[in-house]
Length: 297
Image 1 (cartoon, rainbow, N blue to C red):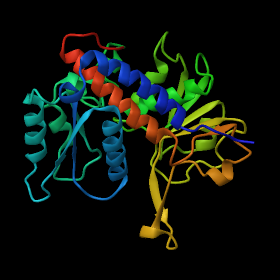
Image 2: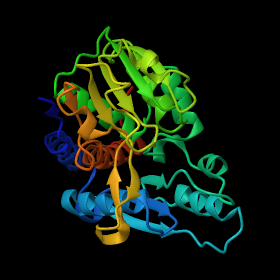
Image 3: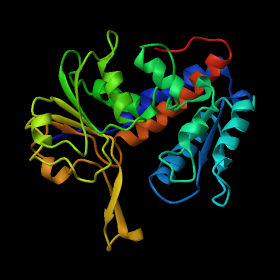
Image 4: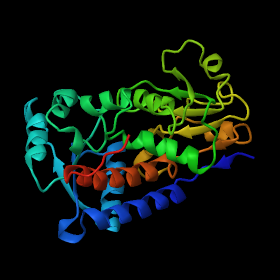
């Protein structure tokens, strides 16, 4: 039987750590503030945004939305990020990604100092990650590894695979998995949508972290029997019988993998809530860093 790797207990443990950290950096009116910059449209980020709002309220993190003007020019996003970077009342900034034209995500992130980049997707934080230096790492990547560790999935010295190569999820996740002690110390294969023989690339993996964004990509035809799957993907497929006409699914085909994979994160309810909890912890940590406290490797 395939074990379900529920995100709730992992998120609860992170919440406890965040509350303890908040006691040292400020609560109530002095609590750190997270500003979430987005387009205000329905889609995967809207689900993430609602999770951010609920978690911030639950933990006592101050939260504010910055909704982009769809009629504004290509420099509007950079202007918003620049303003938030200079705002001393804001300790953390998260920008929706990926974003369509004319928004230039990379240029906007260059306006944000590394300490406020709580999602760890700016050039400086990604460079620190590459060099094994202290800084923020993408919340979703840390969340995926936190789930693996919570449930005792073997990482140290083991063969794992990352399916997906985006600069904000797949590649940073691979770098985190490769980190030396006290890091995971995994041996990592990176596959993606253009991989010619996905089954062959995944054949030796004991754990598969999938962030390809391709609904139901992973079936028992490509996943080795007995492997565990940490599903970071989130996409929609048509479901006319459901409200809204779609259903949200991950990269893994849970029906196909039931009884085949040793363990699987559910979608929703797996990596998602842990990502939100990790983001709140990153925000509290950002406040500590900006007050002159230590950062993490």
